[in-house]
Image (cartoon, rainbow, N blue to C red; front, side, top):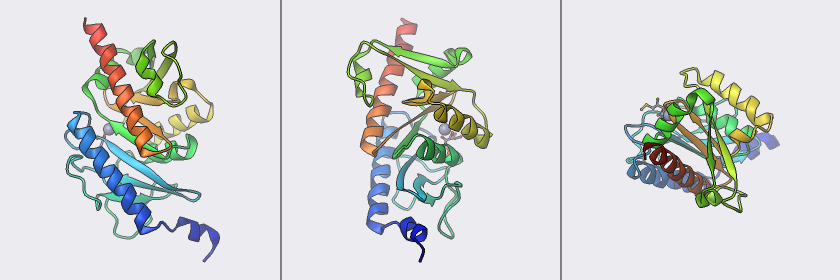
Length: 218
Ligand SMILES: CSC[C@@H](O)[C@@H](O)C(=O)COP(=O)(O)O
Ligand SMILES: [Zn+2]
């Protein structure tokens, strides 16, 4: 067995722990109203080199995930194991985030406030979140006295094209894709080194989207 093959072998215990964490995230995101009607996808990176990600299978209700509802994928977005379920339609976004942003866990949500804000600010291609204490829940932010740009990409069913555009912006060090990004009238992607930290990022960003949305309404 060569070293790459050996490194690609994922221990059943690590895979099960990741799946259990993702099942719990699904229940939480659904309960919050951010993953309704089979929307959303989530992943955990189990190996960086070679890349191995455990990603949700496509079309699953996120409040009823089981540890069998995940697919182990490689750097091409293909399933590693035979007879695997079909992985998320948005698998390539997870691959790019794990590869080019160094994400250890990725969470995609479809909240009402994120969807509305992505529409309202869609023409500018960015929504700016400024001055909120909750910004300190994002990695590395130590004060409310700051502003975070969240990029808004046009929605598309061509996920390979979106993944390529995202990759270019991550490699260019674009600040608007540092903490997450929105897709127009679609939803949020955010990530962190661990699933628990990614959960904090989702909760913070969704809170901030709701603040911005309600502020506009008021
Ligand atoms: C229910 S529509 C949402 C989908 O089109 C997609 O955006 C999504 O988030 C879930 O797709 P999936 O293939 O199940 O990962
Ligand atoms: Zn989606």
